[in-house]
Amino acid sequence: MDNEPLATPAPEIKPWTELGLKPETLQLIEQSGFATPTPVQSQAIPRVLAGEDLIVSAQTGTGKTATFGYPMIERIRGRKGTYGLVLAPSREIALQTQEFFVKHKETTGIHSVSLIGGTELKADEKELASYPQIIVATPGRLCDHIERGNVWLEYVEVLVLDEADRMLEMGFSVQVNKILEQTTSSRQTLLFSATVPPEVDRLARKIMKNPGRIAVGKTSSAAKTVEQNFIFTDEDDKITKLIKILNDETGTVFVFTRSKLGTAELWRRLRSRGYMDAGQVHSDLRQIDREGTLQDFKDGKIRVLIATDVVGRGIHVDNVAHVVNFDLPYEAEDYIHRIGRTGRAGESGRATSLVTFRDREVLRDIEKLIGRTIPRPTGDVGRASSSRPKKKRPKIVSSAVSNFN
Image (tube, rainbow, N blue to C red; front, side, top):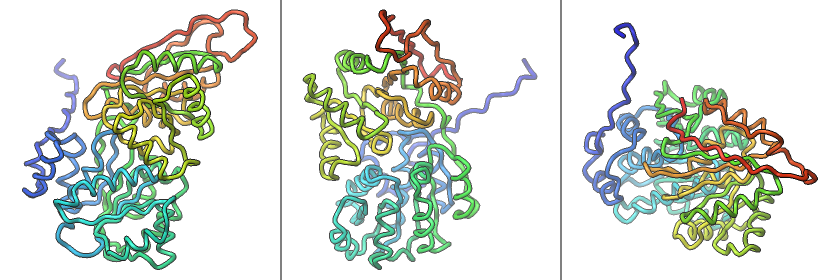
C-alpha cells in the first residue's frame, strides 16, 4: 500500500470573495443568485483577471459565460469604446451570451450588441454607431460589417472564442483569421472549447501568447448527475418509444434529431398525436420564430423542444429534466454535448437514446469515448426490418455516468 501513488486531489473551489473580483462585481454575482463558483469559474477567473491568455476546456453547463463575462465587465466598466469581443459559432450561442450582458446593463451601464445572421444589417449599423463596449457576434456577420467599414476592432483588449471546436467544425476558420487581423497582438485571448482537437490546438498556438490551460473534469464525459439510458429499437418504432417517454416524463424534454427536415417531420408527427406542447427550432425557421420558441421553452409554455445539434448546442436552459436522442448524432462527441443539456448546475437529469441497427458504428464510438461497453440485446432487435413476423421487446440498458471510468 505504501508504494501506491497518491490520488491527485481536485482543486479547491474558492468562494467568490477569494477570486480577486471587485466589491461591485461581487454584488452583481449576489444579485444573480450564484452562491458558489463552479470549478471552472474558481480556477479560471483569477487568471483571467491577471491578464493571462487561457485555453479552457470543460464540459457543457459549467458556467463558462460568467467565467469570462464578469472579468470583462470589471475591466470595461466606465470606459467608452469597444474593448470586448466575443465570437460564437451560432446565433443561439451569441444570443445566450448577449443575454448575460444585457441582464447587467442597468447596473453596470455597459452597452453590448449582438451581430448575428437573420437580422437587418441596417439595424446592426445603428447599434454599432453607438460605439458599444462589448460586441458579441458570429464570425460571418462580423466579417460582413468589417467589409462594409461599419466596425473597428483595433481597441479590443479582450477577445473570447467561445465553443472554438464547434466554430472550426462549422468552417469559420477563414472568417476567424480575418477578424483576428483587425485586432492588436497585445489583446488578451480566451479560448473556450468543450474539446481541444488538433485544429483548435493549432489555432491557439497561432493566435495566443503562452496560453495557460485549464481542464475541468473529463471533457469526454457528461456530468455525473446525468443518468443515461439506451433503448434498442427499430426505426419504425422510434416514435412509439418517444411517446412513451413523453408520457412517463412530467418535466421538460429536449429531443435531438440529425437534420432540420427530421426536426420538422417529428414536430408534425407529435402535433398530429396531440402533443401541442411541442416546439421546434431549426435553421429554416425565421430568427424571430426561433427566438420565440426558445423563450417559450424557457418560460415553460412548451414542454418539449425538438432541435438539431447546430441549434441545440447553443441553447442553455435551466432545469431540463430529460434529453432524448431520437437520432444518435453522427459524431460521438456530440453525444456528450447533447446530454449536457440536462443535469446542469448540480441538478439531476436523464438522457435516453433510441438506438437502431444503423447506429452500431457511432454507438461503438460513444462507448470508446465514455470508456464503457453498452450491452446489446440478443437476436435481431435493433435491425431495421418491416417484414419480420415477430418483434422482441426492446431491452433498456441504464447506467449512471458516475460509474464511468
